[in-house]
Length: 287
Image 1 (tube, helix red, strand yellow):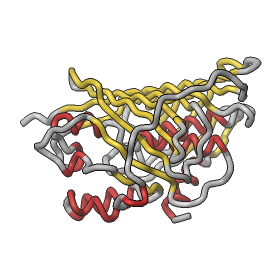
Image 2 (cartoon, rainbow, N blue to C red; image 1 turned 180 degrees about the horizontal axis):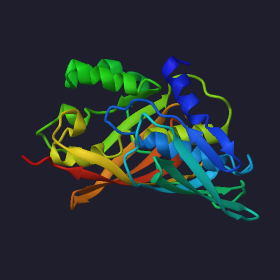
Image 3 (cartoon, one colour; image 1 turned 90 degrees about the vertical axis):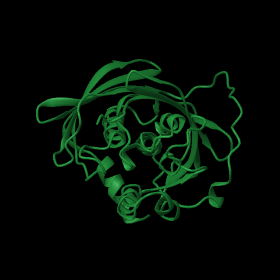
């Protein structure tokens, strides 16, 4: 396990300050606000710690309300909405400086047998054949930005199957992107932790496909201003975040200063593990 992954796992190990109240820390981000994936993952940790271990999360729905301050702790308050025979529902509000910055609803289910089918996994190159972030990013970005991005993502081995948006600025292409990812080290056998790590990563690249459709490079080259608005995930089957996962992403629409991304996460063995949808602000700077 590298130091960056150890640091991320420490961030996800929230401090319990009351029965249903938790406190999390942040770390410096690439932009002057808390990374949205971190807040979503921490909120899911908080919810999960009030649920029996035999009920993993099967879905979450979240809204990003205000930019988070990376220099201040975040307090997560969990509301025990429902404890049923099979399902458990929790609501979490993340607060900083007396104001809510994030809201999450999550549902958990005890495992049961049922109907089982899935669509076919899309074609994708072998992850081991693709360049690492440290190898790929300096090819397309100024050295200082590439170094910061590599450092920010060092907890995760994330590999693009094709050129990322900032490598094809001015050349629109099909609004679809694929990345392989896994934690940069072995993670404990705790199902909730693997789900939370995937939640963390899911906010990194989902709006790339919006940028690709317009030949834009995003914040890295300064031609788009963006932020996550809302985020939803459905966890279909068990998976490990320390084994390769394919994040297959596309954008069906962008309009009104917003862009929609939708995606599926597959195990390397072809199992559909997660479905994801996110809408975000995607604005072209004026002047």
